Amino acid sequence: MLGPHAPRSRPRSDFSNGFLVAEIFSRYYPSELAMHSYDNAASNAARKLDNWSLLSKFAKARSRAATRPARGAHSTGGASRPWRAEALL
Image (cartoon, rainbow, N blue to C red; front, side, top):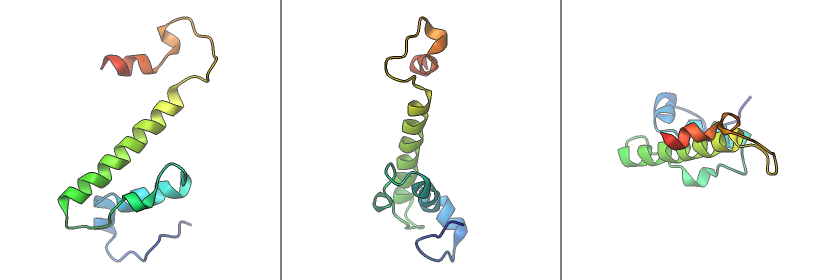
């Protein structure tokens, strides 16, 4: 069971501003996601966007790290490099 930092009285707004999502990910990736960067202000649209922007950057960094081959791995073609298609987009 995840133990949130504070009791949740308005879960819908906590999910919509991205704070609760960040809190969940910070439990699994504590060295990669710092909760001090996120704000739990439900009424401020700019802060919501900032939270979701940080989560998006975190997800992109995690997906890049997962798709890249280990250093020193020998590959001979584009088929073995899944991030090449992403670079073209």
